[in-house]
Length: 92
Image (cartoon, rainbow, N blue to C red; front, side):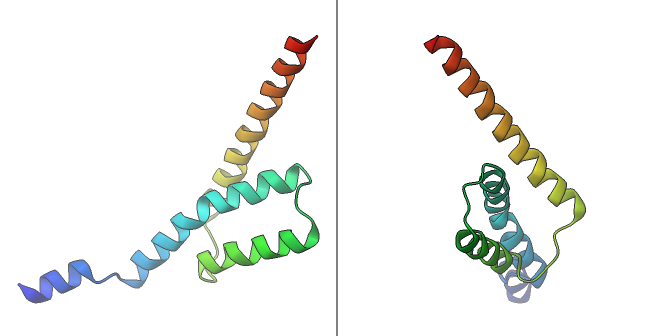
């Protein structure tokens, strides 16, 4: 019984990678969106990339995850543009 409990409670490398990968999701999306808006200077962009790479533990994210990050950033940017368009129309 104790070995079963130990196996269940001890994170495996896969579990650790999954947690790190999941933790990097919002950071990847934010980086893409801010970069698209021109809000990252070279220094901040480098720091952000390094931070994301740290969370990825030098692993390459799957292509699907990369596509999802770009898709999420695109939806955020589109929502912001729609909101700004609505504000501009309301002020007219």
